[in-house]
Image (cartoon, rainbow, N blue to C red; front, top):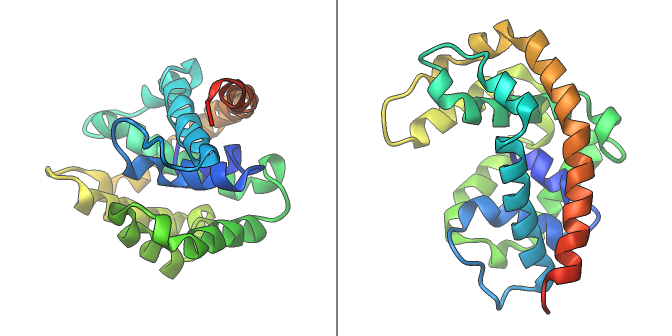
Length: 200
C-alpha cells in the first residue's frame, strides 16, 4: 500500500501513524531506541505490506497488467489504490480527506527532526503538491508516476502507465472494494497483537 493507506490504518495513534509513514525509508532491524508507538507503526506497516502482497484480490489485480507493466504492477497498484482510497474517502476514512491530509502534513512538519534523512525530499514533495489529498486527481497520479519513474535505477514504463490503469479502472475498483475493508480489519487486529506483544 502507499502513504495514504498506511497513514489511515495507524490513524488512531499519532506515534503509530508517524511510524507507518517513515517505514518505507528505513531498512532492516528497527532501532529499539525509537518510541514504542513509532516501532509499532513501523511493524504494522510491514505487516500490512505482507498481507497486501499475499492477498488474492491483489494478486488478481496484478494479473490485469500486460507487459511491460506487469513487472511494475506492485508499484502501480500501490499508487492506484491510494487514488481510489482518496476518491472514495468518505467510505473508508474519518472526517474529510482534506482534514486527514492536513493531519498527515502537520505531523510530518512537526516531527521533522525525527525524519529519516532519505525521507526529507519526499516530505518536501508531499507538502509542495498538497498530498496525500491530491491523490484523488488523476493528473496528480500521472505526476506521481513520472516522479517514481525517475527514482528507479533502470529504464521503466511508469511514465506511460496511466492509460493502462485507466483501461483496467473498473476491474481495479472491484478488487480494491473487496480487498480494502478486509485490510482495515486485519490492520486493527494486527495493531492489537503488536501492542500486546511489543516490549517497552
